[in-house]
View 1 (cartoon, chains in turn red, yellow):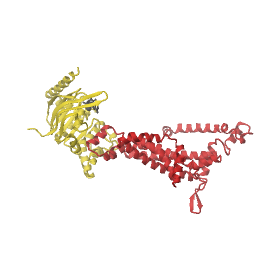
View 2 (tube, chains in turn cyan, purple; view 1 turned 180 degrees about the vertical axis):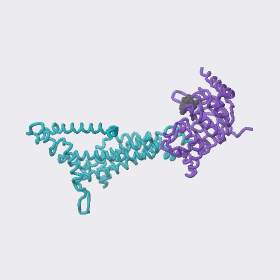
View 3 (cartoon, helix red, strand yellow; view 1 turned 60 degrees about the vertical axis):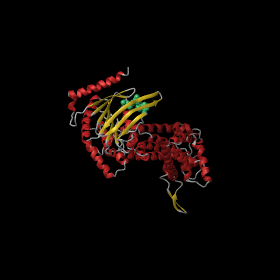
View 4 (cartoon, chains in turn yellow, brown; view 1 turned 30 degrees about the vertical axis):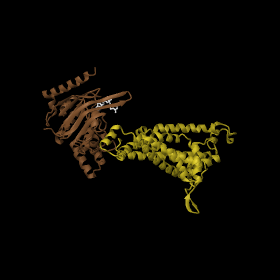
Length: 297
Length: 261
Ligand SMILES: Nc1ncnc2c1ncn2[C@@H]1O[C@H](COP(=O)(O)OP(=O)(O)O)[C@@H](O)[C@H]1O
Ligand SMILES: [Mg+2]
């Protein structure tokens, strides 16, 4: 058992976590020392006690964040009565998480499909490789914070609001790693394997379906993991410019508006947990797929 | 009376244009291969053996000269899937089982599933790998992988088999076994086989005719008849007749090299 934990890397992970937490707790006093609540407190122990329990700290203590996470998820009703029956309670952080996740997933699906389509086109049409690639790379060099409001406002002016504009921003970010990964993946089979298909007089479609696509699957999954994380970032960024009513981004915005640092931090931890969950799901799908494709265990 | 012609090569030349100037891979090659022959190309590396095989397979276009494969231009022969090609490496698809790898060409040709299964079974039997149908390539040794690739090339029963140093990467014991199996397979099926090697004993043991080549430019410098009968075993390699042919091949290779100086 002990051996398995050691091999699983659990010990170093726990050690590192403990060190980070200790440094965090230590940092709470210096970070918060200018707050009025600490002005007349004497003695290090007393000062730390106050620093770890402030209502609007500059840097909240980890247990404050965990407490807030608990209170705003399990400690709050998820469903609420309203004029149109039961609805998700906006006081519950999970409601906001769901709003962001749904935009993330929608944007992810659009982005991945677009990314794959571009890669297929680039691999099969020689002229596109040179003409399309620079545009694709350029699209990613524009800061998303600059382009997000433009997308939201432009779509809003034609009546598209809510999930879709956020999904568009997610897709704008997430197609890129898929395109890059899939161009590499689809061109990865070596000349011998392609020649083999030629000796069978295989059509392009057959070569694609039987050779290029399966060869690209490992790189597809690698790209998907990057894509899903930046889809999440895209969805949150998409919630910022309009001061959206719901979503993790809205929560961050209102938290900073009212100086609720604990709320901001708990929303950030929620984002990290969501990202970890999404990546874990893709990793699971990857393991199952590669196993079904006979990969060496 | 001669058997009908399988491959006819006339005044064939191929020059690769590269950044460092032209590479004369083949210069004025002439060769006729009859149906049912086992012909080996032997020569030092870089003498154009692979190139010549690839020209036959329409994977490379000659610069000049003419060539027919089963009476057709190589391209038409390829479009009609008239040959099976065995590469230097097994070139198996790692995500396919052994059986699925053998069925790959049959899938491309659109054969019904039951027939694909049946043919895969038959040809895996032929290379003595029946028990491994559901394994993945990484679970097989190099020699077994190369046998799978031979079964794959045979699965659609082409009359012509093109093999480019198929056993080059294998150790000598495995290579000997596969040589014996290949001779059996040839005498059972009476296919035309064109085989590239740079091993003299392998060429002499397997072939009914040996084509000796030399590099820069790649030329055919000797064609040696040699047939030790369908029932030959590895023992014949000790016989005086065998050594005599091997000697002549070696002389040819040496003469080819003297052009270098
Ligand atoms: N695609 C190519 N482009 C340029 N040069 C090539 C190409 N293929 C082969 N050659 C050159 O042609 C010559 C013959 O190659 P090859 O037929 O592979 O030799 P062998 O199989 O006898 O070792 C070599 O000098 C090789 O470098
Ligand atoms: Mg070669």
